[in-house]
Length: 235
Image (cartoon, rainbow, N blue to C red; front, side, top):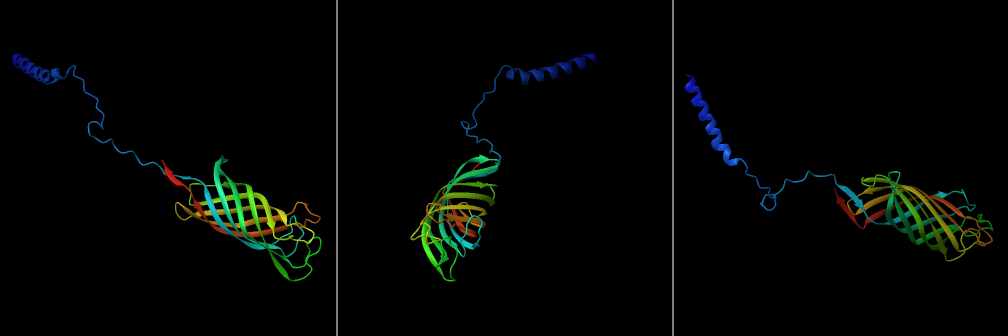
C-alpha cells in the first residue's frame, strides 16, 4: 500500500509539472486593444451639461400704468420694441452674470397734449411722441442656467432721443433711460426661449439738462423671444 500511494503521488506531481513548466518564465504580451482590433468598452454616459453662448432677444414692452416714484408727470406711458443682447461673463453666488445691452428702435411715448412747466396735464387729450433708445451698460443675473425654466434679474442704463421735447414744453428731447426687470426664460428648444418679464421698471428723465426735468416712471410687462447663438452639450 505504501508503494502504491507513492506511485500515485509521483504521477500527480508529474502531471502538474508537465503543464506548468512550459509556462514558467514566459511573459504575457500587453497589446493595445485598438491595435489588436478589439474595441475598448464604452464609457458610461455622463450627465449632459448645457453650455450657453451669446443671446439675442426681441421684446415688446406693454405699459401697466405710470407711477410717480422719482417723477412728477401724469398720464405718461411708453410702448417699446427692443433688441437685447446678452453675453456670459462668469458666475457669482451660484448665478451666471451676463453683460446686457439693448437697442430700442421703436419707442412710442404717450403724454398729455398740453402740459405745464412741471409736466402736469392741462387737458384730457394725449399725443404720441416717437423716439429711440440705446442702453449700452447693463448686467443680467441668471439662476439655474442648465434648467428649462431660468429666473433672472436685469438692469440697464442708457439714453433716449425723441423728435421733440418730451414730458414738458420746458424739458429736453434728450433723456436718460433706466430699466430694471425681473423675469423668467422658458426653454422651447436648444436655440429658442420664450421670455417673460412680469415686472419692468422703466424710467425716463433728462437729469436737469434742461430747465424742467419732470421725468416719467412706469411699471410694465415685457414679452419676447430669445435666440441662442451657440448651444452645445458636454460631459
